[in-house]
Image (cartoon, rainbow, N blue to C red; front, side):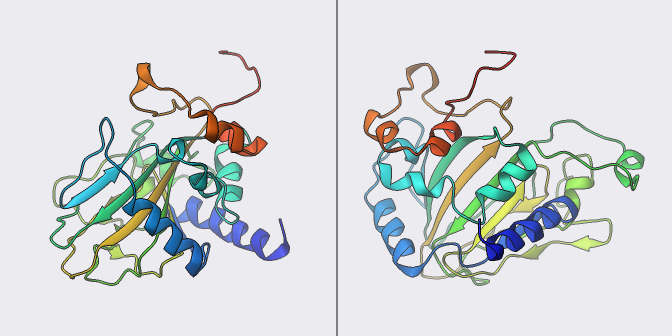
Length: 253
């Protein structure tokens, strides 16, 4: 890792610890963005995928090797390994198209490993470990009309899920993430965040990669019928194979 990405990684790790999210600018270039948008346009729904006002495609890494480099992007994989461990892995990769009229999602968190008392979380010596983190690769320029993600800084330290219609915590109010195509937003699973409506006439393209500690189960549907695509496995680098579950033996293997 060169010095520029090392500095980005350090800032990202600090933000994930303190704020619960981090925006990493310029991870993808314009040609990569165009290629991924075209690839999403070519996807077909399988198993639990769905299409409509929002098109949602799961486990896209298993459909074509072109998705593999998105698993370990420079500036993203380094903070993931720093926060989740050098044996972390991918628990999902989903592609989205959010069309005009898409309604988004209410304030929520994705996963709370354990409820914790506020006194514990407020203790200066206590550092909340991260178990799951999502990387949102924006493939569209996001303004206030194109369903930006809203976040409440520091809310990962709340130790609970938000109540209905709760949009602030500890003096911090929800704020939209406005960014450019090629930027990546990292979100801890405990962070309070929300989707929003697409009031534009454009479609938002988005690719998500979900990372977890090794002991967090990989979410590869259709589960018992799951099979890795041999063409994808043959194209993997050693790191990508590990991210897809090719781990060294450990206590529970």
